[in-house]
Every structure is written in structure tokens, then in C-alpha cells.
Image (cartoon, rainbow, N blue to C red; front, side):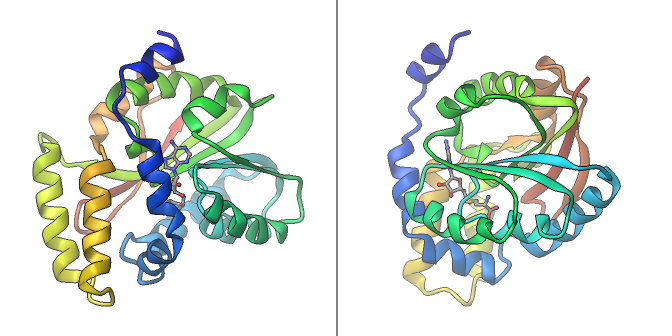
Length: 243
Ligand SMILES: C[S@@+](CC[C@H](N)C(=O)[O-])C[C@H]1O[C@@H](n2cnc3c(N)ncnc32)[C@H](O)[C@@H]1O
């Protein structure tokens, strides 16, 4: 299937997603309070990178302000960093955060669905942090194929994303996610929680890990190695090797 065809059949609204993330300070507060488990993901990701054990190029899709990635990458045998994000506000911050990495950095403003094909070369590590779920199912299916084409021999795709529990519907996931945020996100105001709930319930399309595995296998990846799942069963960090 061609990219144009996949995009035509999608009712995803990238402008709405971009506008939410242009209000970066709310997302920053959510991360700083560790409501999305970045601290644990950082620990498991870092352990995994220790074992990777060789110099690597890094492609960061939905990089946001690159604070999380640059924190993990600092001091490692990184050869180059490329980040793509929809939000110019986030990318301005990413420019500052990646400047400290001391390697060639390329930051691209745009939709990774349409920008990925234009990248020259391949990457040892491709990371998608909390952004794959913004694509709809057919887009994700197509995107796995695109990602495989951008992976260097011996490279690995890492995905940190919300995931449905086995057999769970999107509606059921959203119900328990909203209950959890309203109960547990105590550092945020009622208005801030409403903003986050509005974003997640209208723009997020999580999948089961089994569905992601199915897409991955169809694109010549191996099934995921699960590196981390959080205690509330909302998120997973997964590593997909190429076949
Ligand atoms: C939840 S934030 C995650 C940021 C960072 N990766 C992290 O883990 O903290 C999602 C980011 O993905 C970006 N994003 C969402 N859909 C995208 C798309 N189709 N193309 C490029 N960026 C996208 C948003 O602008 C936002 O910065």
C-alpha cells in the first residue's frame, strides 16, 4: 500500500495533536511528576543500552523536547542524533537539550509518518517514545514497514507506548485511564487534568502488544522483547530486533 493511500484513509488530526504539544508546559509537568513512568523507563532503557555495547546512530520519533532521550544518551558512544516532531515549541527546547550531546544533531519539524521516507541512510537505534499511539491502526501497520527500511543491519526498534491489556477495548482502556488520572495526578489542577483527558481520549489509539507484534512480524521484525510494563498496566517499553 502507498503512503498517500494510507493517509487518505486516516481521520487522525495532526494539527490538534500539534496544538496540544505546543502547550508544552502541561506535558512537562506530567513528566516531571513521573505520571507516565519515565523514571522507570529510563532505568530499563539505560540497562538495555549498556548491553547494546557498541557505537550507534539514534533516530528519535516524536522526540518532543528531547529531554528524556538526551538524558539517556549523554556519555554513551552516540554517533549522531536525529529527532522528528510535530511541535515547533518542543523542537526549540530539543535544540537546547541535544546541543549538549556533542554529536551531529538533526531536528526535523513534521509528521514522522510523512517525513521518515525522506531521511537518508539507516539508524542503529530507532526510538518512538509515547507517540506511535497517535497513528491509527492502518497507519501503524504501514509505518512498521517504513521503520524496518530505516533500520541498519543489527539495529533495534524501541517503542515506549500505551498498550491495551489482552482483549481490552480502547473504550475500556480510556475509562480506567481517566479514572486513574483523576484520582492519582494530584499535582495538577482540575483544568490541567481535563486538558490531558481531552487529548488522550480524542487523539490516542493504543494497541495490544499482540497486535503490535503482528504488525512487527509482518514487517520483518522479531516479536517484542518486553523491557518494562508499569504497575497499572498502561504502558510498555518494547524492543524489536530485525529478522
Ligand atoms: C507524549 S509526547 C512524548 C515526548 C517524548 N518522546 C517523551 O517520551 O517524553 C509525544 C510527542 O510526539 C509528537 N508527535 C505526535 N504525533 C507525531 C507525528 N505524527 N509526527 C511527529 N511527532 C509527533 C508530539 O508533538 C509530542 O512532542
